Length: 358
Image (cartoon, rainbow, N blue to C red; front, top):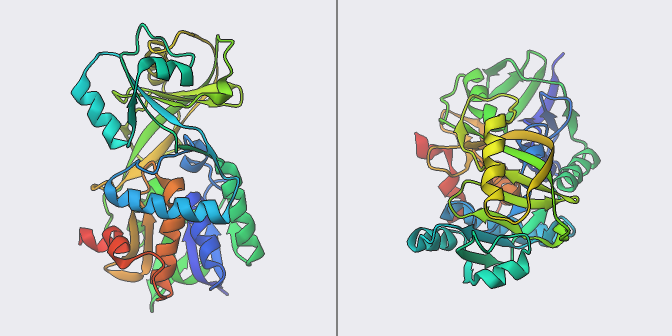
């Protein structure tokens, strides 16, 4: 006897758990995650920063929708941090372009030093700033969605990879054991793999590796009040984290879907670039890791039914924007799947349709 669900969600990262929570008031939902914990891959390895102007113009619309709902429904998830971009070569045009892309305002290097006392004025030639950048308590958000899921009857299956998909009479059978009317592909870096299991065309969603390290630095300054620091040349960024610093080389390395790890050379380069802009030095590397950021060819999310199987629903291609788009993306899914009055304007949601690749 097949276990039956209205909706099967494949993938237990931020996309999967947020959409399962959103839809759980409408339907019987099952969520399948191949690892032993939710959010094992990219979602637990996020930089955990909310920048409303991060991404292309279409992604930024989802950022704003998510921001307002997160502030109203999930207080405590976002804590103001601020962001500063630093430049060392005096290349005005390139720096201005970078600052404009993130809606930063130019400030003097002395103002920058006041906001981030660890920076080295011998190295920093230009600086730009915005205050409305936030830390995201990613673990709290994941656990909040998980609790919503469980309270609404969602069945969550961990250690449960989906290795076989069959479609018969407009129903999906998963691993020859589970039947579902609708399948939601929220598989992150594995999204195209799941489509191929379903005998559907992939959307060329490419995973890219991003590495990070937690380090202790030699300083007497209070790290907790520091903003997020960015190299305007996109070779590093850093942010405070529980008395330490997280430093990334901001690498964008195409790869296959896998349980990613950081290369020592990438980490060393990120730390070196960070150290060229600050007065302090890294005295100890305490941990490092890598996550996969998966992008569609046009850098926008893929949200909606597949053109060849309308009960196969894409929720993928989140890139580096999974947490800051999750509520808007799950709202689009609810609007489409339950044919309800749109909470997200159609002019926005249509931009993410898989049909654009047909």
